[in-house]
Length: 104
Image 1: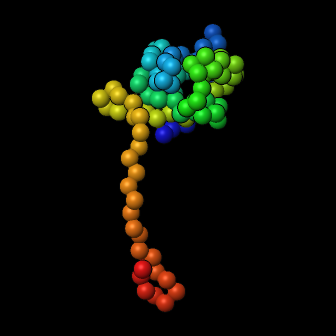
Image 2: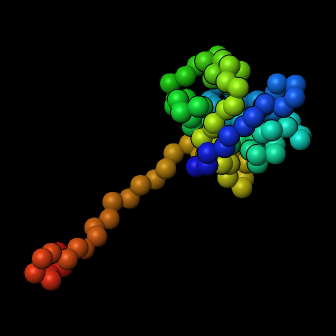
Image 3: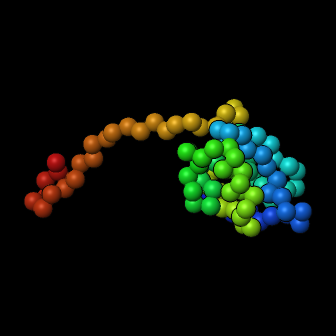
């Protein structure tokens, strides 16, 4: 995940479009989003510190439009153009040394 801060262009735009699944669908050339390195198919996780998981598309757009400067947390797209939908976590046992010098 990366955090990106966007300031509006002289025309007041951020330069990207997002769908109802919080996936960036289009980046306008030479826009603040383009200059910040955002890519199509990347997924928004947070907008200005608010999680987008339970937001409607309208709420996301309202939040993006109403903020002078926008801080986004983004999961970048995979090389095949698909955005990540989940993370696989595995459980691991890590040995530690107790006070007697033994590992458990």
